Image 1 (cartoon, rainbow, N blue to C red):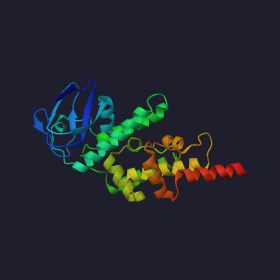
Image 2: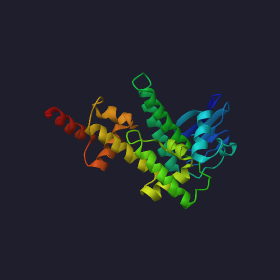
Image 3: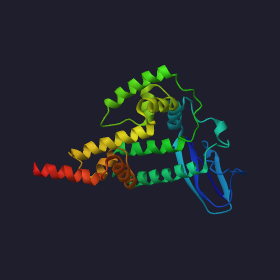
Image 4: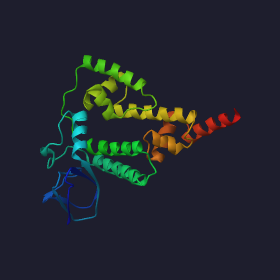
Length: 260
């Protein structure tokens, strides 16, 4: 048995990334693919009859309430979520657990001063997105004519922030809509969901920075500036998008600069 308690002003969310046999929390068996949520000051006690790996994140209550209000239109995490059988596939929970582990590793590797406050805040924001993204949306999407107006406003926002693409929470907050409406708006207007659109915007911002290097002249430095922390995945996405590795883009730009 493992036992502990959640911090006073935080929720703890755990993702079983690997488990052999059964896992019991508070005497109740946790279903396959079910994340574990523990409220402030509550005991965390679980029994596993096999090898178990958990990815855990403690998120301040205020940060959760803001995320829930902006993305879900709800005041916070309701008590009904604690012991609810979540309708989430085991594979998705495991994927979120591994992504959370990667982000936490990136956060820890840069917590010794080798990162700007903005960079650390961006990683923390992604951690919160991964964890709270499991909370199902219950809001009703805005009607079509309203989404058309939202699309025009979103286009203006994106055109005005080409070098610093906003994250999904910032889009929701600026537009005054919830995530479901943003999803439909992006899909209808731009042919891709918000995450894919945001990835494309960030990749294009990196390409512009690499093609016209100024202060920062390393691929990792530029990639980090635009929120890419796993450089293997970033390089693969970049090559898929532009047909060459980011290092090739930078090398060609530097070569041109040297000749000039």
